[in-house]
Image (cartoon, rainbow, N blue to C red; front, side, top):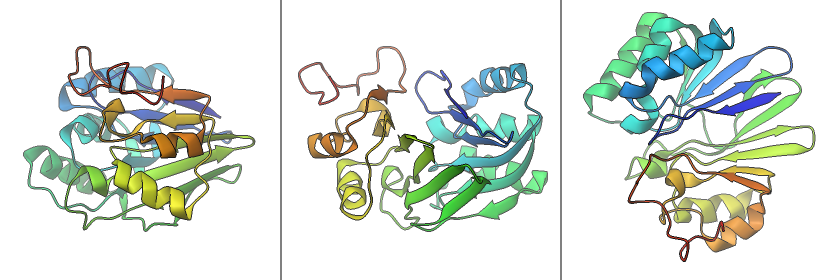
Length: 217
């Protein structure tokens, strides 16, 4: 299995290539990052996605997915279901409909059947959350002895809920909300106990932890 954390500046984009050749893209950065994401994916020889996931409707997560739907065949579109009125979100939904992708709104506890050797579990889903970030789909990816916690933009409150219900220990953590101080609470970090933490943010982002604030350091 290969997991690629694609550099989209301020935003998220994560590619999973499973042992049996299946592919999943989780988020696609901003609209301006779409061309770069498509170019990177094509450089890997990808022409089809089994799953494309929009963790929540913020533009820095879904904007680039519009270009992805235009450039690749997508079998399944997994969406948080959180209502949003932005033009970017409307364009994404239209792109998925035009592609003819099967539409999925997962529930907490569901699994995504990418590959028999890979377990992808939805640890959190709430399309009725009052805020986009807390509507983020949170996924735990496990392959053999390696696990990844993929937090979207989930806040500390959501981290606490998840950790009270599930085993959140993992070797790799994609920190919530780009490493900002709304996420990655100390107790949660201690429970995950990661060997590596991915912070996906743009240069000079004012939301990133200071060295004094960060429990990741």
